[in-house]
Length: 202
Ligand code: HEC
Image 1 (cartoon, helix red, strand yellow):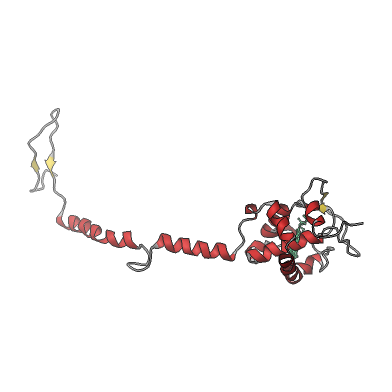
Image 2 (cartoon, rainbow, N blue to C red):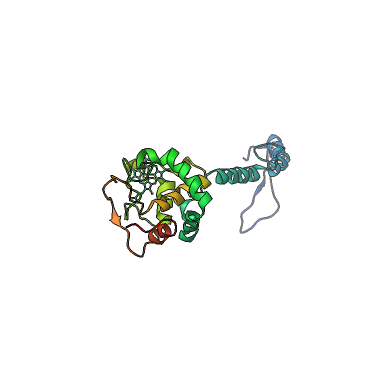
C-alpha cells in the first residue's frame, strides 16, 4: 500500500494509530453506481423486468389458482361440514358419479370392496369419521394401493366422493369383502353421518 502514489497519511491519530487515505479505484466506484441504477427495476419486478405486478403477486395468483383447482388439505374440513355434505342430495349424487368413475374399480360400485376395503361396514383401517375418510381419500395410502386423490380430483369431486362414501355405510351389499381394520365405536361420527342418509342396517 505504501507504494501507491495516491496514498497519503491522514491527519488524525488515535492511540498512536494512523490511517492512509486509500481511495477505491474509479472503475470499482462506477460498478457500484451502476448497481444503484439497477435497483428500481428490482423494486418494481425482479423476474418480469419492468412489466407485471411483480413476483410476489404472480406467486400469490398462482397459489390461488392452484388452491382453487386442488382440494384444501383434508385437515381444513370439520366432521359437521362433511356430514352436511352427506345430507345434500346434489353433493351425494355428484359423488356417486365420481365414485363410479374413480373408486368403483377397486371398491366395487356398491362399495362392498374388492382390491380396496369394504366401505359399507363398521370396520375401518384408517378411521371411519368423515374427517378420517376425507384424509384417506385426499392423501391416499400409496403403499397399500389407495391413490392420493387430492392430487387428481377437484375439491368438489372429493367432497362428493366423501359424501357418497358416508351414505354407503350400512347398505350391506351382497358378497362384501371381509371386514378389515377396527370396528368404529358407537361414538364414531360415521354412524350418525350414515344414519342421517340411509336407513339403519338390519
Ligand atoms: C387402485 C385401487 C383403488 C382405487 C381406485 C380407490 N381406492 Fe380406496 N383404497 C384402496 C385400498 C387398497 C385401500 C386400503 C388401504 C390400506 O390397506 O391401508 C383403500 C382404502 C380406502 C378408504 C379407507 C378404508 C378404511 O378401511 O379405512 C377409503 C375411505 C377409500 N379407500 C375411498 C376411496 C375413494 C373415495 C376412492 C375414489 C375417489 C377410492 N378409494 C379409490 C384402493 C383403491
